[in-house]
Image (cartoon, rainbow, N blue to C red; front, side, top):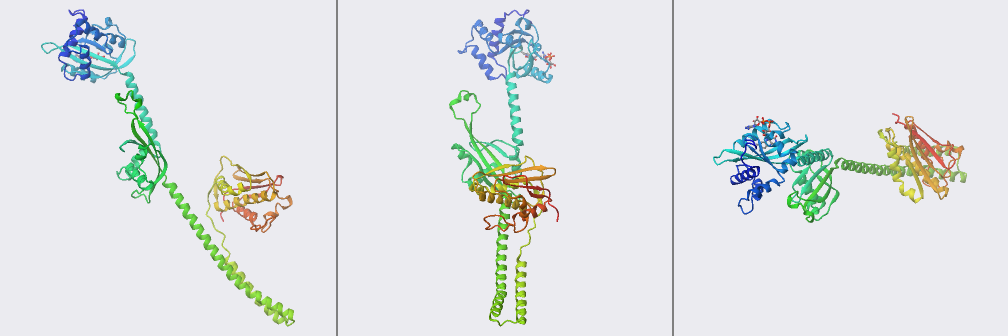
Length: 545
Ligand code: FAD
């Protein structure tokens, strides 16, 4: 059937077709289609006069077309013209296939035709092409319209452009995939909970922990740990609008060799349901959400515990050492008392004139033997030089530690510190404790020198840099400095040029020299620096002894 061959005028055709369709909608017709067309047909249920009905179809925002049983277009409304770019004169008498862009798989068409030929309504999405050649996604509903004998007389096609919707869905999917990729790559547990504690979104770290927990829900365990160990429930806190940050809790995980520690943070928020009812919902608060982050800090906790233990061990060793020294010194004092008594007796004898050479020589031998014994006791008590295993050393880190340690003293002395570390330093095998003691020693020297200088502007400059393959450290103060003729002497044991010598045995620079030698380096007082003292050190890897 073509429009030319049709005896019905277009208006009548459209009105009759729609009326016939509404009188007996084919099975599968979406209820909203029936409702929409029913509205066009009049609320009272009475069919509208054909002219009015046609006007309503004509003005419908949905592209409507009516074809014969072979999909030859008999009528198309204004929305169809607007969407496809074809005038109705151009499409009437043509197959609907003129809209196909050949990208829709033939299986879809076969399924479409099987459905409508079975007198059922088909709804699906096709890729269409406009007259201008632009592709668009058409969400199409085709309903057969039957004649009085129940045979297919017409097809009623209704379609709308859903390209934008599809693009939005695509963009949303892509955005979701991106968010998931980022979340999965994050090395911390991330989970989004609803107000009932249900997991709305979680990342790979969550699933990994769940596997380690042999299926138990990690979030339930973290919530329980927060309740028991930190005294609050994260969801309740969120309900009251409170977030929390870096709250540390532990979980016992089978086979993990000790507890696992997590630093938990929570951020409460509200999310609007994307339903139509919430379209204008600016006044509604939305559903409660809790974003929970849990960072596995087990390694850090274990490191702190290990350092704590080491510290304890060192303090015990120190106590032990001082105890042993006290015992040895006590014994030596006791032993030295003997020769002192003999010396006293001998001096009395000499004074009284009763001493003869034989007696004196015997007395001196006694003194010498007792003195020797006391000396041996003292030597035995001398602590062995602590042996420290060579470890990878970063001089910047050691200096920073020492400066931090000295902060209070530096502040108290009103010293301005100018710390200029090299951005990158090579690491080498060295003896950390000894290097640390050496840096402390040199900085203590600078503090004392500045205190003794009485200057008001006191400055300590510490710089590091790479010189060939060695690390150079310069510790410089603007104190009184060291006279050129003493720049070698100061490294001799027991040399001391301080005005206040209490607690300073004059061994500092001698020890520094020893530690530098152990690291295959050198230490010198810069003769060219005249505004104070500049100690220059060169350090390389520790030499194997
Ligand atoms: P065709 O050779 O037309 O058909 C491909 C396959 O469809 C065939 O192999 C066969 O399995 C089946 N088929 C085709 N015609 C019949 C028939 N008369 N009886 C039984 N099976 C048949 N297509 C679009 O691409 N875009 C549209 O917007 C669109 N709107 C339509 C609206 C209505 C009301 C109707 C009835 C059809 C509509 N069609 C639409 C389908 C269109 O008629 C074509 O079937 C389709 O475009 C494929 O065209 P083709 O030339 O690639 O292949």
